[in-house]
Image 1 (cartoon, helix red, strand yellow):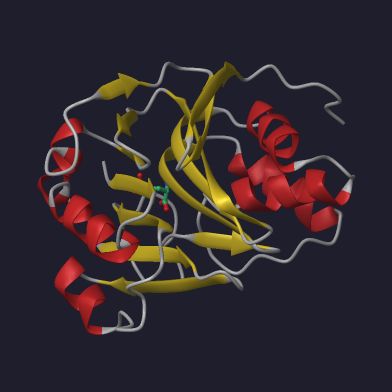
Image 2 (cartoon, rainbow, N blue to C red):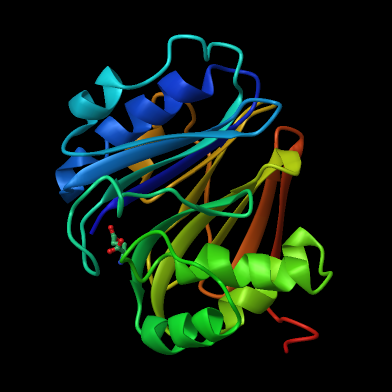
Length: 230
Ligand code: GLU
């Protein structure tokens, strides 16, 4: 197991993500990472080791950043390393993932045959690669995510952020736990409720096969029935 967290609102995303990740440490992990949307692009910080190690490489200029993702990894595919730590980013789309993509070899072969280049040894990286494949076909982000996820076999809870959608997070899940935390002009997701207890007592459990679009104004949940899969 590992942990994923996401935040969008008006607060200091980095400190909220770090506190939430620390509250998921009991689940075990071997590396950790953060993605921050800074208004111009996505900054990624990740390392093998503990959250204390991650904190040594975090920026101190990030107080104004109000949206981001966090991850603690328990390696299943690919050694524990900075290269394999999440978030994984393809073409400006960053992903944190809890679970296993059982058919990642088939998907990776397909993507490699189409010219995609991988930068990790994980099963997870097929997710942002698949999303970018559908974006390249002209789909909007939400439809690209839905189409990408239809290819995945296995279990997942996934958090997604795109540098071209600066105010939006997406969360999708099948088989791995994911809870949405509801605040006032701020919303969260996490693998487990204790991660978010300093911030809210109002939660929605995302169901298997659902996608949640999250902004600081609110959330929209729908089922993952993809159209135009190709
Ligand atoms: N299977 C993914 C990996 O090895 C995610 C593992 C996890 O749930 O932490 O990177």
